[in-house]
Length: 97
Image (cartoon, rainbow, N blue to C red; front, top):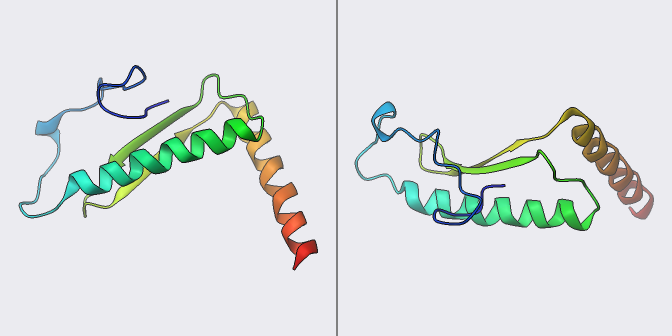
């Protein structure tokens, strides 16, 4: 799982600064930092819910407009597990409301 540049889990292999169009004046770093924090929070929440994170990938990136984006890649079995957890949580919220 990607957490931050320089961390043990950082994957830099796909980064090619010359392959993207950088717009002067846009703050890409702030968006990326926010996405990094959100990715860490999501990973922590999934682990706390008992989701098997083996093979999962969370990646923080900046979108074209500078906003932060978190990309989540899961093995199919893990995706089904997360979908089941979301359905259970949604049912509990409907009952509580």
